[in-house]
Length: 587
Image (cartoon, rainbow, N blue to C red; front, side, top):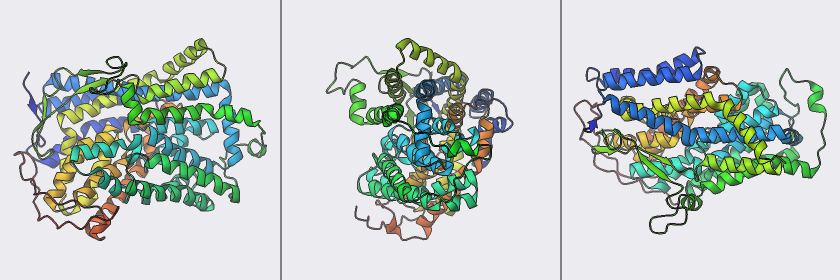
């Protein structure tokens, strides 16, 4: 089988018409979801549409397109589905043991106000889980906790999704930025600092946004001091750690500072009124339930185990050990915990072409079965340990796990189909076509660079994947337009975080965590405006950095010569003289 080179303007040689055709699978998927069609049917229809466009419009060999779908489905099940399954397993254990009731009362002891609970769980605690694991884990855990606390299912899902935005660029110990540095060749410390000069604005805004969405403007104004403490403490920490340390611990340190600051603040301040849902009985929340300290500690152990296991599993040293060490220093696990499978008919058979990349390059297609080092495995072990501490036998835990599998099986199929759609889109070049349409916006590109990141995450479900997908394009376009490539690359990852709440994977995770399978379209309608509005705000901030604010407010690298090599079907982007680099700020 001969390699196949991607084309980016297959329809009449016009990038914008081609982009509309490339967007058809997304329109089909989101359109059917919005019409209340079950998510797995919507995903399958979207995948079939994507295959048809790839094969008949982009002329991708059918065998390649089919194997791209298989590759995406495998990735959807492992690692994404494995995380979702075991996150829900832990939650089911705590419900079965009765410990979640104790957790619920202990949180109510801190703050019976639903608004404060939303700040603690959806924003601060969710940011901690994002920093340690990412890949859907924070949405699954935060939404499950909110629903257990008594939040309405739709709001529990929506608030968890909105809260899981500003921390995403530094998620999974900085994985998105590390990937961005790898694909662009730009310095990691500068990219970390650049994102850390954009996102703190939104870290401050998002807590206010969550409460306004949940309870309205007037109710938000009643708790503005708490929103300011939660968001402000996280934003300041996010800026400091990202600029003076690096991307690895930004979310974890920021989340801890945010949670501790808010809890301490609640010792000296409480809202004048306690906000509750209309359907909740007054007496159910005025009655204080006293619990022994030992019982409270025991009830929180599953979440302590979860945080500890996820954090440890995410450290590079532990991950390397669990994967069998390195070639130079293998350990006793070498060869047993990691298997790499090259996808037949796909691996090194798809050629990416300029201007998406600087020079033609073959795309690797490898599925890694690293069962022990997966985040989902850490969740499984945390669940087993939690169950044993709660007094369950191994047989009882197996039964609980079986019920969890049965509960999420359709959702796992949905995730597999949606990731299949994303991988076909990437392999065929559909997403690159849409990206090039954004890149052709000339003077407005700083704004649309953020929207390009938003599109990438909405399509792939991952800020890391979006950075790999569009990071190189952002850098090349910046060089052609005389812009700072550090800024446009950072725009990709910071704009991308706002697409996290509407990607299909996150919608399914949220629906499973809140027991709303089949209501993914309802959740999508709930969060879509928030996603688009926040992404546009990121675009405005990027535009101000590029066109209005002093150049030395953003890290700079010496500008490279404009890239002029492009295929005949690619849109022409006029090269502009490279701006003289401003001195990099001291770090």
